[in-house]
Length: 156
Image (cartoon, rainbow, N blue to C red; front, top):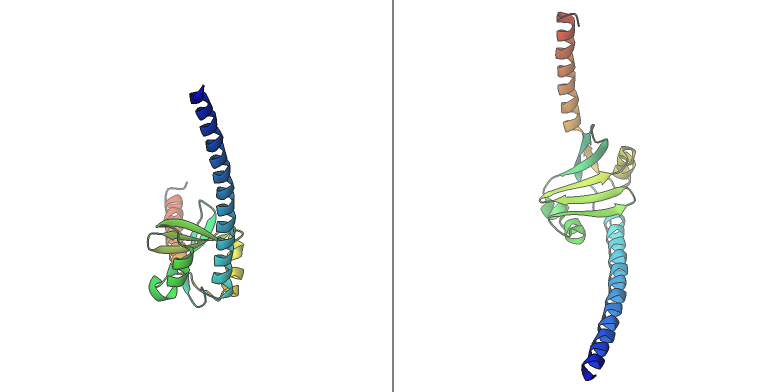
């Protein structure tokens, strides 16, 4: 009989600890969310992205666009990285539809809608470069010209 009482007592203690653990987990999540909100607010309101240079990238097949940081992380983006980076491959939401992505030494700003890029860039005083897009367009034009030549040559 003493053994079953001890088992019942241990079961109650376990249940109590599990309930406390669940409460602590919810509390930790709430604090983490508040911390992330403050980090995003600090990055944007304290103009930590100000005067940084970004290359516009587009994925036609995927239909998404993003900005890729150009420059040396140390100095220009060091504070942002210190605040927002959680791992070598992590994403940090700056605001709805806009997130910082850290991938090894690369930093990108991802956008759910490409129409968000220009207003975000203007508001945060980002310098934009479109070299990769213009290079890609020139390459596509050359390919189109070559294909049109083949079509005319073979009367297709």
